[in-house]
Length: 332
Image 1 (cartoon, rainbow, N blue to C red):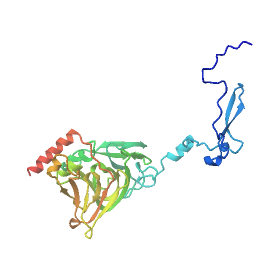
Image 2: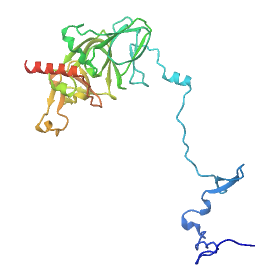
Image 3: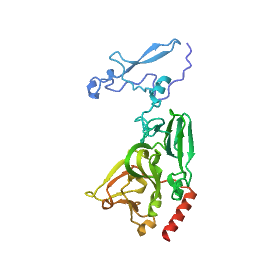
Image 4: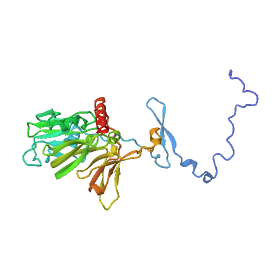
């Protein structure tokens, strides 16, 4: 029969090369594992006639393969049951599963008796409500000339919003930037809250805007704070879980970063500790040139701080207003 195959090149043979000496190993223990215990491929017949490799071995089960499981999925009924709001039993409530959401329950008994019908909230914090609710911006001169600077209460440069419910079953939901909400019930005490960290309070509380005495407070974290006193609920905001520092005569003086200070008890009067040096003017300072100082000799109480340095966003109007205040203080 005619053979048209070309002869192999010089030095090559048609015979397959012999395996190296010692292969397969006569003593597999020298290799640490037995070669025949490794997973072997067996083949089964595919309907197409082609062999299909199957991972396995007659010497044992195939090796474990990591499984990727999908994320938990809810049915619609499960999702609604797990995320719906509760009926509410007190004026201000925060669900533990939603620490960044304040639920206001109108119709519940207020702190001074009678059903809750009205509250104040920081403008821009309403995220939802049910029932018939009316929103009104508080007038600039509603509480006298001393409240003309109330626009500085929020980073939006806006006034407080008065919320009135005409439906006793109405509910209001407030939140801001996923900050943690803490509800306090004042029972005759007073507290000062950073304007950026005020969320809502009952109208039974007396409130006024307090301007800190030194302009350095404006540079570091804002000129104005809200002082609340009387009986009622108040909701404050913080980035993360707040920390309370006690101010006592038997303890050292407390210093805080103005941008991390959320609130302090009404009996305290903060001063400002400044460390402005020549290096600071050229950006080579420590970055901690201003601190709020709470001296227990001037009063005892507590200070609330957050694990975050918050820089309020201020519009041009507020900056001009602050410049006017600065000039007035300098010439007084």
